[in-house]
Image (cartoon, rainbow, N blue to C red; front, side, top):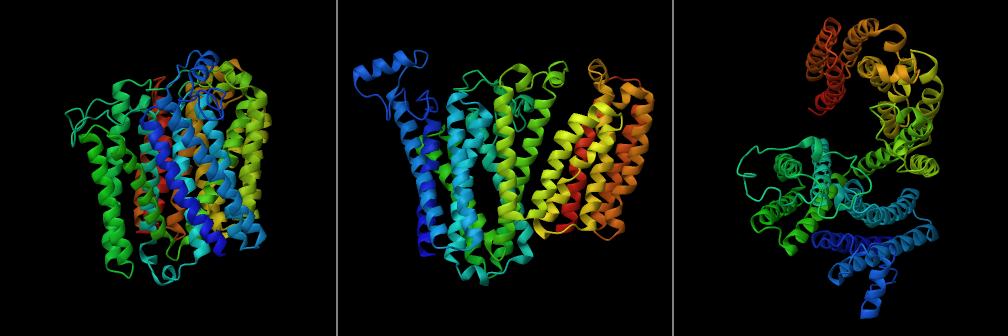
Length: 574
């Protein structure tokens, strides 16, 4: 156990160094300092002599060699590779000394995750700094550090964590952790899109507290594969939207953190409270200094490192008597998310020919020829295997079985058969899409509970009016491809009537959590308000001939399902 503790501690410290090197690489614009991978211009390290430089530039004539950019990139790569070696040692000792199964499995997952990070490093170069890939790679560095930290805490078995009882503020601490992860992701997205200086003033942005912004372009996660994204391609309003969002989320995070710090101050967790407060203050100061002093290199790197420290302290707070549940939440979301991604990929593989002829889907990678069917199939298989393996080894078999069943239901039963067989396709097939609340429930309880099925019922009833609004808007596309969606087979008027009837049923079903005492008044009034407005929107769509209104109703349905479940959480926590 001592070996596991020491290796994980060393790995965590080394992960902090890798995060710093990654920040250095980004800040000096060295992401493409080496246009190939894993070498650099075909060399094991980087060209030094004049003849080596000449050979390098002949190999990659479109990427002029700059040693000041090649060095950070190569150093970052080799240090990241060392991190993988540390993870291998960790797995070796975990298996050799037959440590606790959860600790062994966590070590194996860490090694797997670092391998995925290596894959993202390759994609970062091969896809020329595609923003979503780079952001995922940067964010993955913080997750790697967190995993090393989790292993260290479990192996060290610090007794003081057993005496610090913050169960009363457990959910507040979890909210702080989630908001912090969102903020770290936004920070990575800001760096990826070169938006760090989009707001050169403080506290205003572009001389205004609400400047001109383009959120749609700024948060377009499906940017085109192919262009070189070095120095970014977004217009200034889009970059301002990204930077502004990062600032606003920082305010939200500070608000929740201050509440948590104040609550912990009056418990035996006061030392953690003061540490959290000091790290938070330092991080805010560095963020402001980045703007005021125009992103100086060492302050910007420190901003990344203190973000890592803030993450570790927040994880430590959440580890007090709650380590297994917090880990379970994170690992369950990863496993379920991988399987859901696999299902979506399979759906696009099967429907690639149809997608090519529909306006909504014609720009997907397969119809555009950006990805081959074979590569997409391998990717889908890898996601399914990885997700299932994580759920079986880290969560429980019941969740794994239900998740795979949902995958099969959506990717094969719905996509292959129901979608082309009956206008009730979305009604029957919607059961697979309604499974996530059940999967989350079983991942924690390892049992199927009636309350979980109630949440499934809400999404199951919500799905038809949600999708039929989109089907009305895209009726001509479905008709052209002979897909029997309800507006195609029974007409728009009939479909709108069905939407009203299902919305009435949805309003009634959404009240069941209150009726069975699963929730309280906060949820009741929220569900009633959202449901009645949804019904009003459905009736208005029935009475109007506006071709654009079905899309308005479709968008509202997305907000509806998010807000109603958010209200359920708020009601439970408060």
